[in-house]
Image 1 (cartoon, helix red, strand yellow):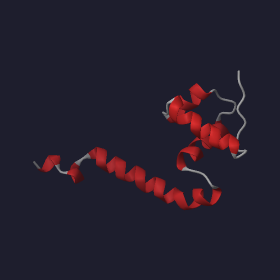
Image 2 (cartoon, one colour; image 1 turned 180 degrees about the horizontal axis):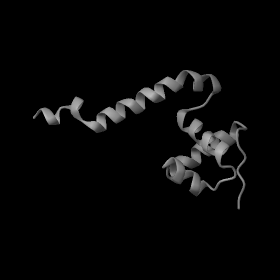
Image 3 (cartoon, one colour; image 1 turned 180 degrees about the vertical axis):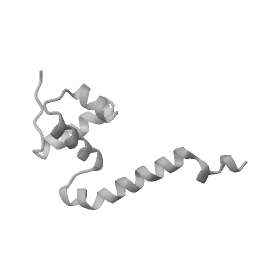
Image 4 (spheres, helix red, strand yellow; image 1 turned 120 degrees about the vertical axis):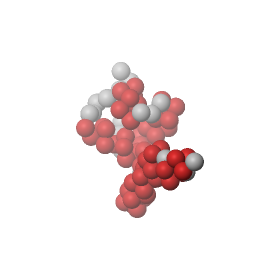
Length: 85
């Protein structure tokens, strides 16, 4: 049964590491008025601009329902300009 303990699960270790990474970025991103997902969007755009929303979603592993509100907030903040193709 020890193999079923939470602290023995790889998925929990990865989850914990992800949360710790996000928490480490939070103070810096808070000063910039950004969330961690918004920061990731900007990183991809800096690397690969212009890019379609579909490709951006693929790169970030986000669906359009999650990505569209992020992009709208970034556009409202003046951090990106969306163009129809």
